[in-house]
Amino acid sequence: MSERNRTLIEVAAAAVLILIFLAVWGVSRGRAERERERLAAGHETALAEAQRACEARAERLAASEAEAVFRAFAAGIQGSALGRQKGMLDMAKGVLLQLPHVAFVHVLAPDGAVLTSSNEKYAVAGRADGRASWALGARQLQKRRGDLPGTVEIAAPFQGASGRTAVLWMAYKTHELLAAAGAAG
Image 1 (cartoon, one colour):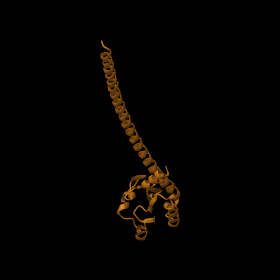
Image 2 (cartoon, rainbow, N blue to C red; image 1 turned 120 degrees about the vertical axis):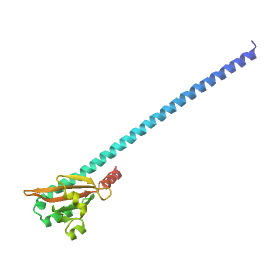
Image 3 (cartoon, rainbow, N blue to C red; image 1 turned 135 degrees about the vertical axis):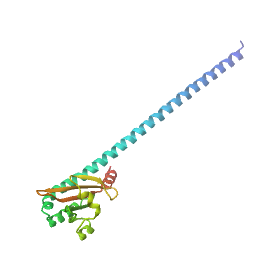
Image 4 (cartoon, one colour; image 1 turned 90 degrees about the horizontal axis):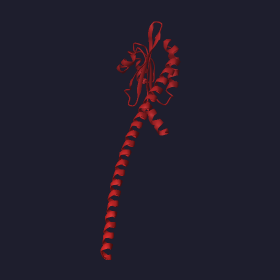
């Protein structure tokens, strides 16, 4: 075989080896890219699930804070509510309303008469309107999504020796609390 033919064969063999190397490298790179995309999708899914779980936990904590504020206020005014001491109830209401996430508070007699209220309309009328029917019907602590956007409403009766003597009804701005917590984090 001549030197020229041998060189051509060597060049052809080198070119074939280079093409094989490039093909193997391309296939390997494609697999690696697909694996990276699969892992990235898995991470995005896990991150979205973790965010949903965190948001759900934050909402539960906000609702828990609302209930804790409600229970603490109820414990503090129980004697005044049972004794229908309007002056003490008005003073306690004023202190409660200084908390940033309290939307409203009403202490009502079982018939809907207002003992104290943060709503001037209720205070002037002396009676709660139809919105209060669910709260007045509470036999134990009850919660619901508030009529005001982003709030939770809580109601519970005060029980005296002769039965229900008053009802505490409060709304708490849970979404505002969550937004404030998100801004702080």
